[in-house]
Length: 189
Image 1 (cartoon, rainbow, N blue to C red):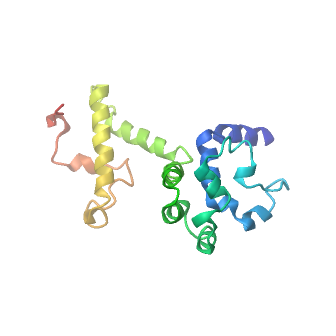
Image 2: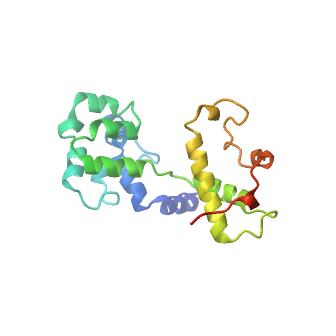
Image 3: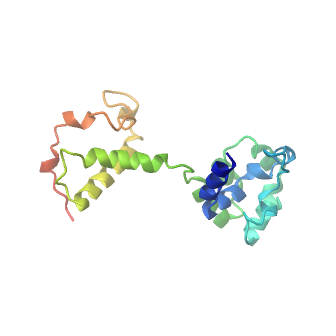
């Protein structure tokens, strides 16, 4: 069991995750720090952990020392109730570069499900029926599919109608009934 845990830790202990951990306001909360971690280990704030924080910058020091906006009562209360992205959007105005980096890092997925979803969609586009598609055309179709999926989420037809939430099940054949025939499509460079 210990070998599995150590191998998982080594796999997930990358710089991006460490930075995300050090920028998440929740891990600086005194309630969190007062509860022992698994294995009866005392918890430390990320800024006290050498493995997590290699160097501090001026803005990062303000955040970690709870100076300025970060030290207000509202910021401390909201740290336990708001999502990290909302919190940084609200309280990161005095440290705009740090807030921008924090939001970008905290938006990154921490598991491989998004990558698996991409490969599942790619296997739908480049399957046994369409095995003669070259890699360039497959990549372009994948790009188009992903962008159509993202753009469609902002329409009312995504929530209602015959094609509602069409991208939830990539294995279904919504496109087989389409009047658009893929071989008639031409990509314009």
